[in-house]
Length: 134
Image 1 (cartoon, rainbow, N blue to C red):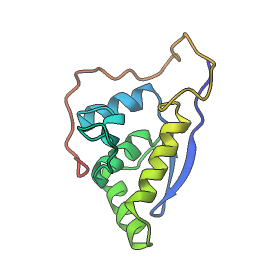
Image 2: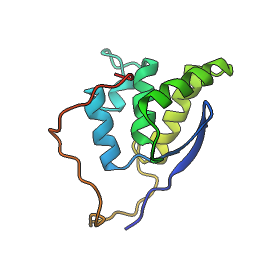
Image 3: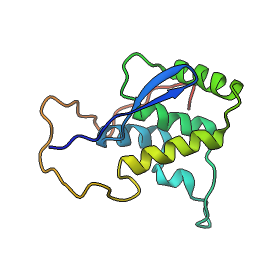
Image 4: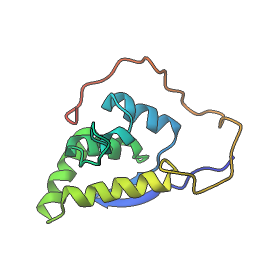
Protein backbone atom coordinates (compact mmCIF):
# COMPACT_ATOMS: atom_id res chain seq x y z
CA UNK A 1 0.00 0.00 0.00
CA UNK A 2 1.34 3.40 -0.88
CA UNK A 3 0.81 6.20 1.58
CA UNK A 4 0.40 9.78 0.46
CA UNK A 5 3.20 12.02 1.65
CA UNK A 6 2.56 14.50 4.43
CA UNK A 7 3.41 18.04 3.36
CA UNK A 8 5.00 20.24 6.04
CA UNK A 9 3.60 23.79 6.01
CA UNK A 10 4.37 26.71 8.30
CA UNK A 11 1.22 28.67 9.07
CA UNK A 12 1.09 31.57 11.51
CA UNK A 13 3.82 30.08 13.71
CA UNK A 14 2.47 26.52 13.56
CA UNK A 15 4.13 23.71 11.66
CA UNK A 16 1.41 21.54 10.19
CA UNK A 17 1.71 18.19 8.48
CA UNK A 18 -0.95 18.19 5.78
CA UNK A 19 -2.34 15.16 3.98
CA UNK A 20 -5.74 14.42 2.50
CA UNK A 21 -6.55 10.78 3.06
CA UNK A 22 -10.00 9.22 2.97
CA UNK A 23 -10.75 9.83 6.65
CA UNK A 24 -9.65 13.47 6.43
CA UNK A 25 -11.87 14.07 3.39
CA UNK A 26 -14.90 12.57 5.15
CA UNK A 27 -14.29 14.62 8.30
CA UNK A 28 -13.79 17.84 6.33
CA UNK A 29 -16.87 17.35 4.15
CA UNK A 30 -18.97 16.48 7.19
CA UNK A 31 -17.94 19.72 8.91
CA UNK A 32 -18.47 21.76 5.76
CA UNK A 33 -21.74 20.02 4.90
CA UNK A 34 -20.61 20.04 1.25
CA UNK A 35 -17.86 18.59 -0.90
CA UNK A 36 -14.43 20.17 -0.83
CA UNK A 37 -14.66 20.94 -4.54
CA UNK A 38 -18.05 22.62 -3.90
CA UNK A 39 -16.21 25.27 -1.89
CA UNK A 40 -14.65 26.61 -5.05
CA UNK A 41 -17.66 26.47 -7.40
CA UNK A 42 -20.49 29.01 -7.52
CA UNK A 43 -24.07 28.03 -8.31
CA UNK A 44 -23.60 29.11 -11.94
CA UNK A 45 -20.53 26.89 -12.38
CA UNK A 46 -17.94 29.64 -11.99
CA UNK A 47 -15.19 29.72 -9.42
CA UNK A 48 -15.32 31.50 -6.08
CA UNK A 49 -13.14 32.19 -3.07
CA UNK A 50 -14.57 30.37 -0.05
CA UNK A 51 -14.79 32.13 3.32
CA UNK A 52 -11.67 31.92 5.48
CA UNK A 53 -13.35 29.75 8.13
CA UNK A 54 -14.10 27.07 5.52
CA UNK A 55 -10.50 27.14 4.27
CA UNK A 56 -9.37 26.74 7.87
CA UNK A 57 -11.66 23.72 8.29
CA UNK A 58 -9.91 22.10 5.30
CA UNK A 59 -6.51 23.01 6.76
CA UNK A 60 -7.39 21.60 10.19
CA UNK A 61 -8.98 18.46 8.73
CA UNK A 62 -5.90 17.71 6.63
CA UNK A 63 -3.52 18.38 9.53
CA UNK A 64 -1.82 15.21 10.77
CA UNK A 65 0.03 16.85 13.68
CA UNK A 66 -1.45 15.93 17.05
CA UNK A 67 -2.43 18.52 19.61
CA UNK A 68 -3.41 21.32 17.20
CA UNK A 69 -6.89 22.54 18.16
CA UNK A 70 -9.33 24.62 16.17
CA UNK A 71 -8.49 27.53 18.48
CA UNK A 72 -4.80 27.10 17.59
CA UNK A 73 -5.67 27.25 13.88
CA UNK A 74 -7.78 30.40 14.37
CA UNK A 75 -4.96 32.06 16.35
CA UNK A 76 -2.40 31.05 13.70
CA UNK A 77 -4.66 32.53 11.01
CA UNK A 78 -4.65 35.85 12.89
CA UNK A 79 -0.84 35.78 12.96
CA UNK A 80 -0.75 34.74 9.29
CA UNK A 81 -2.82 37.79 8.31
CA UNK A 82 -0.86 40.07 10.69
CA UNK A 83 2.32 38.95 8.91
CA UNK A 84 0.91 40.39 5.68
CA UNK A 85 -0.39 37.18 4.12
CA UNK A 86 -3.78 37.00 2.42
CA UNK A 87 -6.63 34.53 2.16
CA UNK A 88 -5.58 34.04 -1.48
CA UNK A 89 -2.26 32.63 -0.22
CA UNK A 90 -4.19 30.33 2.10
CA UNK A 91 -6.32 29.24 -0.84
CA UNK A 92 -3.15 28.48 -2.84
CA UNK A 93 -1.94 26.26 0.02
CA UNK A 94 -5.28 24.44 0.02
CA UNK A 95 -5.17 24.10 -3.78
CA UNK A 96 -1.65 22.62 -3.58
CA UNK A 97 -2.90 20.20 -0.92
CA UNK A 98 -5.80 19.12 -3.15
CA UNK A 99 -3.43 18.60 -6.10
CA UNK A 100 -0.89 16.67 -4.00
CA UNK A 101 -3.65 14.48 -2.61
CA UNK A 102 -4.88 13.59 -6.08
CA UNK A 103 -8.20 15.23 -5.29
CA UNK A 104 -8.18 17.23 -8.53
CA UNK A 105 -6.96 14.32 -10.63
CA UNK A 106 -4.61 11.40 -10.27
CA UNK A 107 -0.93 12.15 -9.97
CA UNK A 108 -0.07 8.63 -8.87
CA UNK A 109 -1.52 5.89 -11.07
CA UNK A 110 -0.77 3.24 -8.44
CA UNK A 111 -3.86 1.93 -6.64
CA UNK A 112 -4.24 0.07 -3.40
CA UNK A 113 -6.90 -2.50 -2.69
CA UNK A 114 -6.33 -3.02 1.03
CA UNK A 115 -7.16 -1.00 4.12
CA UNK A 116 -4.24 -0.24 6.42
CA UNK A 117 -4.70 -2.27 9.60
CA UNK A 118 -5.16 -0.36 12.84
CA UNK A 119 -6.51 2.68 11.04
CA UNK A 120 -9.30 4.55 12.80
CA UNK A 121 -12.56 4.29 10.88
CA UNK A 122 -14.88 7.28 11.13
CA UNK A 123 -18.60 6.51 11.10
CA UNK A 124 -20.48 8.49 8.48
CA UNK A 125 -23.29 9.46 10.82
CA UNK A 126 -21.27 10.49 13.91
CA UNK A 127 -22.53 13.62 15.68
CA UNK A 128 -20.72 16.82 14.86
CA UNK A 129 -18.74 18.76 17.42
CA UNK A 130 -18.99 22.53 17.65
CA UNK A 131 -15.89 24.53 16.86
CA UNK A 132 -14.81 28.14 16.46
CA UNK A 133 -14.24 27.40 12.76
CA UNK A 134 -17.85 26.43 12.07
